[in-house]
Amino acid sequence: MKSAPGKFFWKLFLSNAALLAVVVGASVWIIHGRYQAIYTAELTDNLRAIAEALRQGMADRSLAEDTDRLDRLAKGVGFAGSRGIRVTLVSADGTVVADSEADPAHMVSHSDRPEIQEALRNGWGVADRWSDTLSCDMRYVAARVGPADAPRGVVRVSMGVRRIESRTTAARNVAILSSAVVLAGAVMLALALARIWSGRIARITAAAQSISTGDLSARVQVSGSDEVSLLARSLNQMRDHLARQMETIDRHSRTLEYLLAQLHEGVIVAGPNGEVLLMNPAARRLLDVQAVGDTSSPGGGPIEECIPHDELQRMLRVGAGTDTEARDVQPPIEEYRLTVQHGGRAVTLLARASDIVLPGADDATAGARRSPDESDGLRSHGRLLVLTDVTELTHALQIKTDFVANASHELRTPLSAIRAAVETLISMSGDDASDSAPKLLKIIDRHSGRLEAMVTDLLDLSRLESPGTESQASAVPLPAFLQDLHDRFREKLVARGLHWQVDLGPGCETVFGSRHLLSLILDNLVHNAVKFTDEGGHVTVSGRRMAEAVALSVEDDGCGIPPEEQSRVFERFYQVQRARSGPTRGTGLGLSIVRHAVDVMNGHVTLESEPGRGTRITVTIPQAIAPHAARQYGT
Image 1 (spheres, rainbow, N blue to C red):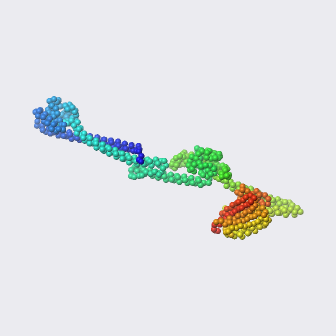
Image 2 (cartoon, rainbow, N blue to C red):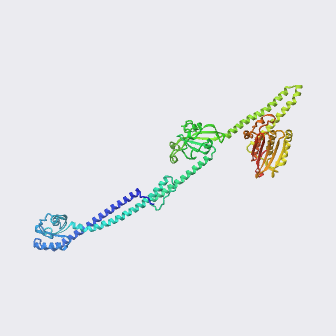
Image 3 (cartoon, rainbow, N blue to C red):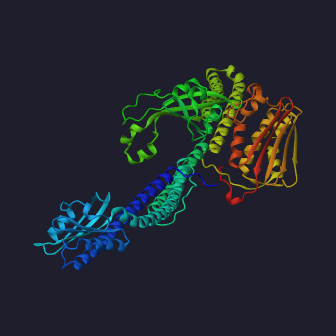
């Protein structure tokens, strides 16, 4: 369905039609005038020829003689022409001798007629004037008879102007009809041209409007090489340029959105009007808030509605930081630590805020052509807030602090006991020394052994935690290895009356891994099982072959570990409540050594425990790696 013609169509059509009408009308007027002039000139020549013929016929006659015959001659000539021609013969003194239309006797003197006067002076006279005799406009052509110095009279031939005009009416009608046909054709041509040109302009306008609304799929079909075609090509080129720019902007926007979405740090940007402009998924996750719009779209909402923490709201308000009017001064970074509940656990966040410069509304175009100082007037200041989850770092610092405190405490206790025993021995003499010395020496031996075990564990843990720690992997025969393990703990097992069991499944005859690390792992696990199992209990070492790994488990039916403490037993120096009293007190480093040793072999460890029913710790060691790819561990 074609659309109705627009304003441009009517302007173009009406202007062309008016121009063509004026041109055709002027042409018809000029042609008619020229035709009338030519016809009038031709008629004048004919009248002159008649007058000349009459003058030649009267060259040897006198106009004053035989006036009756001359009157009949005039009436005969005028009648014979049958073309409305009037013939008048006038004597030299102006007396009308003969006239084809009237009685000469009743006609006044013609001496004052301009054509008569001109003919007497120059031989010929022509005039257009009103005829009192015939009461109409006439064209007169007069010819002198005789020489100028002795004229005998004047022959005058005339015709009515209406008769002349009637002769040109047919020509005028033909010209008018022709002009009407030409004008109609010209109007149709103007209509066609207006439709053609306005249609092209309409298509260009429609494409431009589509582009202005963001629809870059519109293109203009171009043909020809005129200015309109050049305009259409320029519009298509502009559309292609805009499409490339929009594609680049969209790609950059998606890249920015993707990068912001991949950041583990939360990023929040606030504008000068107190609204959140941007909040990436990490920030929403860390603050446990709903989305504030797309990652790259503005208009998130007021800070107070988007950010639940008062201190963070203050840090995001423009002007919250130190005044940064001096351009050469680095904006200060404000830091704040807060703890939030996330997923049922406490999360420690480090919030850092600073002032930033935001682009203005037209900075995308103007800023590209201006220097930073020139385009700064187009920009505004905002606030950038970066949230970092420092829970693990805080926990690690706390572990380090606890480690120093625990190590100091664990080392000071046996050292104090040894020092006290040594001072007692030094201060004793005689029989007192001989009686108390064995007891004090046992104290020294027990605490020095504890110090040695602690130092050994610390050295093992230090080596395992060192960067670049690697294990020397080899094939370890598991039955023989577990027999050696049993031999090392035989005395303790017998002393506590514990039952030792080994349960190896099919395919567990050999395990591929570091013999030294396997010894560290199983020694510590069996040591804990023996220490925390009551007399008459059971200690079981089992092995199961999986697809690409071997799972080794140490299980006991001892006191077990409370659920609230199971997540911390692999920390250094951490001991459950029972382990902190009585003869079972240890260094608190065993399970931490197990965890690090398993990490070195790219395995993982799991804990299953129920208070009063025992504990099961399983170590899974990958077996799909080649020996040359194993990590090295210096023993």
